[in-house]
Amino acid sequence: METRFDLIIIGAGPGGYVAAIQAARLGMRTALVEEDRAGGTCLNRGCIPTKAMLHAASLFREIQAGERFGILASEVRCDYGQLLAYRQETVDQLVQGVEQLLKGNGVTVLSGRGTLLPGKRVSVASGEGTAVYEAENILLAAGSRPAVLPIPGMDLPGVLTSDGLFQQTELPASLTIIGGGVIGVEFATAFSALGCQVTILEALPRLVANMDREISQNLKLILKKRGIETHTSASVQGVEQGADGLVCRFAEGEKEASVTSQLVLCAVGRRANSEGLFDPGAVPELNRGRVVVDECFRTSLEGVYAIGDLIGGMQLAHLASAQGIAAVERMAGKEPTVDLSLVPACLYTDPEAASVGLTEEEAKKEGIPVQVGKFPMSANGKSLISREERGFIKVVAEKESGRILGAQMMCARATDMIGEFGTAIACGLTGEQMRRAMRPHPTYNEGVGDALEELAGGSLNVMPRRKR
Image 1 (cartoon, rainbow, N blue to C red):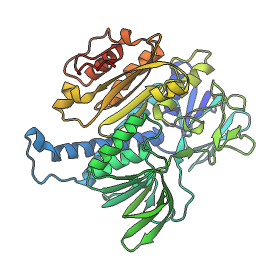
Image 2 (tube, rainbow, N blue to C red):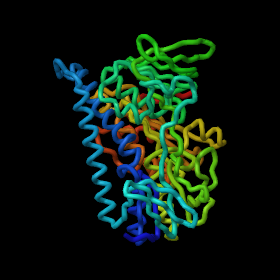
Image 3 (cartoon, rainbow, N blue to C red):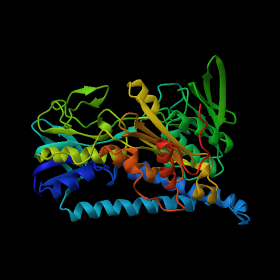
Image 4 (cartoon, rainbow, N blue to C red):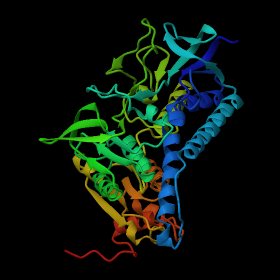
């Protein structure tokens, strides 16, 4: 087998495999090293299986609530085994698709654990032994693994990370989730809809604190309505084995409290998967365990690049993919095709939430005068048809120029619609320019047009604002 390449990539997650395909299409002889299945955490143990569970759980909840649409169903139940089979079938189909793409684009796949060696070399260790390869450039895309809180009891049976929770073959009766970020609230939404009693413990003052404050507030109310108990500003002290299950002790302000459940999920974020990645003689500059890179994703080692969860910033699959493409384009002497400063944030709860660009609060902190157009989705025809819960679409624009700076939305199909605003911000469009596009009726997307009309002075579908 060939041992020298133009580019060797360690890690076949959404950053690595996309970068490999792009490199091959740009004419580079490319090798991709992966010790597990193609697709990385996102495809095998993260985004895709989680969203499959959310889809099934949402369908189950909708069927149970069918009476409000005149649909009467009796003895509706969840076969958790079949749900898991559907989830795995979805994952397998996508993994096979990635493998076919790699093969079809001429990428050499090296199965085994990759370690960076001095002199732009990589060793690949597998059951068949260890082989060494070299390349003009090396891209590190090894991803991340779940972080675990350094508190007593985290090693008890039944205290799990997301990886461990996916290995459970039976639906738990109750679940305590430590962490109210995206991972925590998505698991809470899915398991609660399937009949599990869920409690969320979040250390920060609000859920999904990285998103718009109004999204956080609405989400907490919706979760409460669905029977999910949430505690914010809750500092978890430890987990103990009790007579009736796992007891999670926490402090909420000055109040000491506890919650008992069958399982405990630690969903407090992820850390760079750098263990065993570097030979002692080939360690790049690190900052708190993450690889330090410049604007071109170059590390402190010549010819070595890094992307995705290995480096600082948001840990998102679509960001890793965009970074991988940009890094390869830089290697090829091309300008990146994607604006990496505009990263959509998506929350796949029910309803969904999504944002891109600046919030009103962030713009004010930066001293940018803005105007805001907000449309309540309770006035949207498609939302009324499907009986969606409370939601909104908010648009933030620069006051003087009218240029779109950001958008936040909480409604059905929010994660699909946010891309329109990403394109608008990247292209410097104003609200007036966005309004030129006609939006079909009845659709959730009409809410975008209404929010833009509110930005311009008032939507035709809401009562006029009172003059002060």
